[in-house]
Structure formats: structure tokens, C-alpha cells
Image (tube, rainbow, N blue to C red; front, side, top):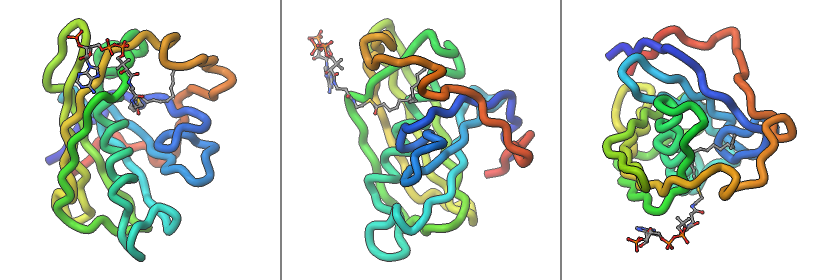
Length: 168
Ligand SMILES: CCCCCCCCCCCCCCCC(=O)SCCNC(=O)CCNC(=O)[C@H](O)C(C)(C)COP(=O)(O)OP(=O)(O)OC[C@H]1O[C@@H](n2cnc3c(N)ncnc32)[C@H](O)[C@@H]1OP(=O)(O)O
């Protein structure tokens, strides 16, 4: 299925998943789709392994968590932030290193205190490697972190190969 991309989310400086200056991080890029989903693209490397050649399940969980947690920004931009209070991940296939992976996340339920969502990691052959359900507590950003957007380099990072559509 082709997903039309309607926008790109911002990256940060040091977040493990989206920090562009975190040398051990995933440096994932996040694209909002026409269908109100969010797609993360990232390429794990050797430092992200568990068994040799296999992505660590905790790292897979981290990227699923952030993709679902960021999907709320498609709707509210930066007005609503959440902290994860529950994450349930199912690992269905080994996830390889050194190849680009796609993660899709979406919000499935929301009220004034929490939001919930689901997500999946897809292998290059289209198989679903992991699925997740996450629950998030809405917290104002100033209660989550002492966050200065400039200091934390919170900005859109444009790449020459930013996609107009993503096929999964
Ligand atoms: C510009 C910025 C750039 C940023 C840079 C880039 C980053 C962009 C990332 C964005 C995407 C994010 C994706 C990753 C997000 C994380 O990784 S966040 C890190 C992991 N999570 C956490 O640290 C959360 C830790 N927990 C807490 O801080 C506190 O438990 C909470 C959630 C704030 C709640 O605490 P509280 O305000 O003191 O409230 P409390 O009375 O304890 O609970 C309130 C209610 O929630 C319920 N509750 C609390 N915990 C739970 C639970 N685990 N399960 C079920 N119910 C619960 C309680 O039972 C209570 O219910 P009621 O009794 O009122 O009915």
C-alpha cells in the first residue's frame, strides 16, 4: 500500500530515537501520512544488536514507542505531549541490522487525560516484524522537561531523499 506523505516532523538533538547528534541513537525520520498515520524510517546499525545480526528488542520497542507517541503530533502539532505509561510489544520476526526499516504508528483512542495507539515495524519484504500497543498520559511539555527548542535543536531536518510517498 502506498502512503502519501503530507509533512515531516521535527528531530531533536539527543533523543535516542530522533536525536541527530546522538551517535549511538537511531536518527529516525518521521513522516505524517494523508491517512493520519506516522511513518518512521531508520536504519539500525551493529551497536543496536542483541544477538549478533539481530536488532535488540528494547531498541525495537523504543522506536515503536516514539512512533506511536509522536502520532498525536499529527493532530495537535506541539500542543499535546504524552509520556508512555504502558507499552506492549510482540516480536514476530528477527529484525536485521544495516537495512532501512519502516515503522507505522497511529492513535486509536483519546480522551482529555490519555491517548492510546498501535504501531508496527515492517521488514523490507513487507513482513510485519513487531507490533505494539502503547498508552500515554498527556502532560504539558514544561512538566516533562526543561526544554529549549533551540538548545535541543528541535527542527525539521530536510533530506534530499525525503519521500513524497512510502510503500509498505
Ligand atoms: C519540543 C519537545 C521535544 C522533545 C524531544 C523529542 C522527543 C519526542 C518524543 C515524543 C514521543 C514520546 C514517546 C516516548 C515517551 C517516553 O519515553 S516518556 C518516558 C517513559 N515514561 C515516563 O517517564 C512516565 C513516568 N510516569 C509518570 O511520570 C507519572 O506516573 C505520570 C504518568 C505523569 C502520572 O503521574 P501523576 O501526574 O503523579 O499522576 P498519578 O496520580 O500517579 O496518576 C494519574 C492517573 O493515571 C493513572 N496511571 C498512572 N500511571 C499509570 C500506568 N502506568 N498505567 C495506567 N494508569 C496509570 C493513575 O492510576 C491515576 O488514575 P486515577 O487514580 O486518577 O484514575
